[in-house]
Figure 1: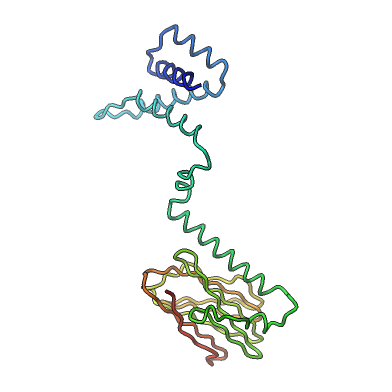
Figure 2: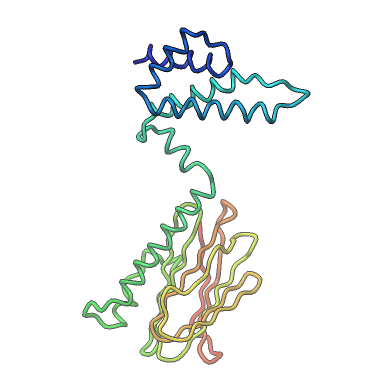
Length: 251
């Protein structure tokens, strides 16, 4: 098979460059009669040659033969490559925008899963669902609860992106402000995942504000700009009165 491919490539080269002999042309035609894909390849390679000749520079001559043979070699290499090859995945995920999009989507999916757990009735009271143990997030999370208001903020990190997931349950409207230093953190996204009440958001320099009524889930996505520890502050208000405020840190 290798010898046949090698011989076929030489015949294609001779056909394209116009140096083919009558004997070689008979042999090439015989091979092409038995292979539709090879016929198509030859037509495409001839088209490539014509395109190269059309854009040929007057100052820099183009070696049509070398370029066409490179196309033939690249096609043969592609046919023998495997999807399991590590280089394929490196090429697929190497561009930064692709990696960033994958990380962003994964984070949003996790936030949506939290939302589903929050709004699904599992035979527990709203207060129990909101005020569960948060000791693991003592420096980066919030858990606040009264008879009428429950607020929980659960953070998680994927790569260099930090996801702040707010879960609230309140009869009357509350307003939450998220403050940060823009030199330390960059806002990537801020949106409602689910809300039973009116949706209202506000953005200022280093500040994100949103309102919540009933069961509400709100997600903020930030990118950390430096390796050092950074801080942010969360303040919850109701009727202009501060319910809770806390400064948190990201390592």
